[in-house]
Image (cartoon, rainbow, N blue to C red; front, side):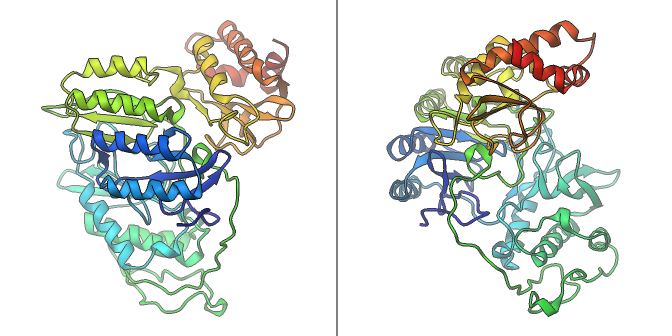
Length: 490
């Protein structure tokens, strides 16, 4: 096992990544979920070998923090001993209720598995960058609309058949549609798009494909496609061989690789941004009750995606006592419990342990990295600030607005822009309006007093808000300069 993963890599079990609080690993169970005893075992391993902090990411992966090179090896051995098979290679993701949701249009798992197999057979994994991903969405109560992907396939019903809508480069709202086709054609288009990306190099994504390539992909199912190599120059030694027109053939491409270790990195919860994850919540948050016909799933979220391992052990133990058969990881930093005999009992216990059990909880709209003192890079106590804001200014955080509290300018928990960002640096807690943690703050106040500055903004919005106006719209109307002044002077 490498002590540090390569530049651009994601922190898989076999390649832990350096962060401000030690090494981090990210696990994606092959089975899609975990038995309660398996989650308990992982929690105990996290206590023995890490800093006792576990996370569920925006894309529904499990993370264990605070490892060393030696303890990461021990953790990997214990994961193997628990019999937990974890995915590797290009992630082809399905929804957390895939195959068991009576409201889904189609079970996406068979198509996802076919795509995984072809990716491996075509030798694409080593030639694609680590943040490339595919989403196969069967619809239903918990869609994958909020998850970004290079290629996304979504089941749609037509008047005569089931088909798959194929789009690229975005989430459910922003992705560019290519075609609506049958399952075989959807698979071929998805793999062809990944081959085109591989030919551009490991830093490329589907957003980098040319218009000609997109036209080729869109017409793949109906006409002989254009070459998938229009923008590659053989003179640069990038192409070995090609079987023109075959969506499944693998090209031999020379790659330059950087094996240099880096620390610390940016990204998902102080790891690396998890293959394009965004913090926009789906229309159906994975919190609450979800009917599965004869059974009901219970969704419980981790505040800011993070919890002490002991709290997760306690929750999983109580779930096991209540008959839970499986715990599935869900996008949106949540866990779905299946097979429970007493749903309300586990909800009550989860709330007591500090978990999020209500989809309207303001904590679901706040992104916060571990911060100080957990992370060596953190300059402010992010979680304490976030908790205070959630309690004192809940009216500020509605569905229109995301607040980001970042320990430093890397912006690990929320790489994109947020309506309001608090970022720690040598001057205290800076406020960025409608920007990222990397932007120059418009105002400062001491880190210990940052929540009071936000409370002043919340009070102003409460007083100035028009009937029916969202918090985000009111913020925009007040203007960045006015908001910065409210934060600074309160």
